[in-house]
Amino acid sequence: MQTVAQLDSFVHEVLERARFRPALGSVVRALLGGIAAAGSVVLSEVLRPQVQKEDLHAAEQRVSQALKNDAALDTLPDVYLAMVAEPARALRYRTVDGSDVSKPAGRKFEHLDVVRDGSCKPRDRVAVGGPKEGNPSAPPASSPARNERTRAQGRKATSATNAPAPQATRARTEARKASKAERVKYPSPPALKKLGYWTVQIEAGNGRGDHLPLCQEIFSTQDPAYQALGEKAWTRTYQTAIENVLKHIGKDGIWLMDRGFDDVVWMNWMHAQVQQNVLRMKSNRLVHPGTKQEKTMNVGRLAETLDARYTTEIRYVDKSSHKEKSRSIPFTWIPIWVEGVDHALYLIVGHTGRKRPLLLVTDCRPETSTEAGELIQAYLERWGSEEVTRACKQLTGLERIRVRSLAAMRRLLWLAMIAVGIQAILILTRPRLTRAILDRAKEFIPKVRFVLYRVWRVVQTDLRRALEVRPHLFT
View 1 (cartoon, one colour):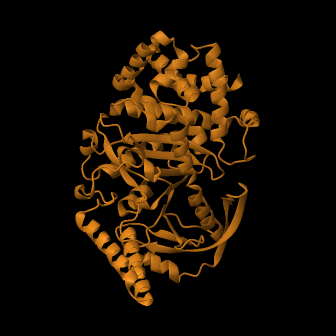
View 2 (cartoon, one colour):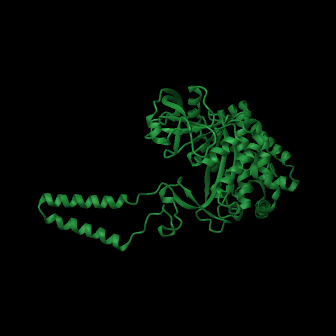
View 3 (cartoon, one colour):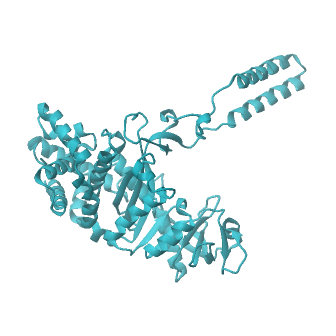
């Protein structure tokens, strides 16, 4: 099968660049092929199609020990980035984002952290701690006083039924209002704290649905190595990941970042590191409009005073028909200055139809209104990186990870990212093979922009069939 041969060729290239010793190379081959075939990072599921039943436990122990103890695997990120550098440079945009791997029942995992997980349904959420422990997400426990107030309101409403009709109606209305106020006082939170680990995600994209993962780094604030970085450990962790990517693909391209990076330190650092960066600005940021000498002004209020005299076309997918459409949005842009930032910035205000306008800031002056409009589209395309993060989790089952040491988890997540990245490279560099694969994919929606799911499923089917004939294909 051509898909299996192509995948094996990419895996062979990884091993050639890494120059692992034969035993470790066999482990990496088994994991990369097994993750793609099983769609899982659980070692028993990855290895079961490749070894005899009586040898499964021994093989699992051998792979687990290699992940935990073999420091040679730490070269995997550099090996992968060197392999994908050329196709990554052809993609104009790079996105930086944070995510998490939740392990709500993983009490025995090394350096287990507490993360905020907003992706799960309310019935699946597991809160850590309570209001007394400083967890603002956990709803307060019921108290005897609160229960007594509820019963008193009920008795009041019941006794009022013997009163004249207007008074009874008024009493019931007041009771309903009090009950409603009690209910909305503690709304269901959008995200709860859960046990797990944080991750740094960096991807490259072209704004047309093609994305390539570049970095997937797991870390924990409970890790002594993280704590040794000091007060700026969180920022330094992200900067280290970005520096490693820049070392291989260069500073060209436009880096897109969310408003979590709206900070003077990040504005100065990114300006010195990359060709251009675009980040979303918080609406309460104080800026100098026009020149440094102008009086500071809240950027949200400043956006309301600007005349959106330009328009740009943005692409979106109609949820009812699943077809790509476009619509015009008004926007404008002006130069601004921010205290502590030693270079001029340019604020782009786009009215996308939401309650508040989209506030973007870039460190390179747009030469034309068309270029400024392209930056709005580029930032909206940034959400494609969320698609890659979700694909990595769903296609490889990251949150089912079972290895317990942080070093083993870090290396296994690298391998999962490489397994996804290999197929993303196939989409970018083998268009004819990609079209042939998509012709074999059976889908309800005839055309989608993000085709990685479909390619993965076809390749996964081919790998499973190949492993049935040749169980030692990757070992």
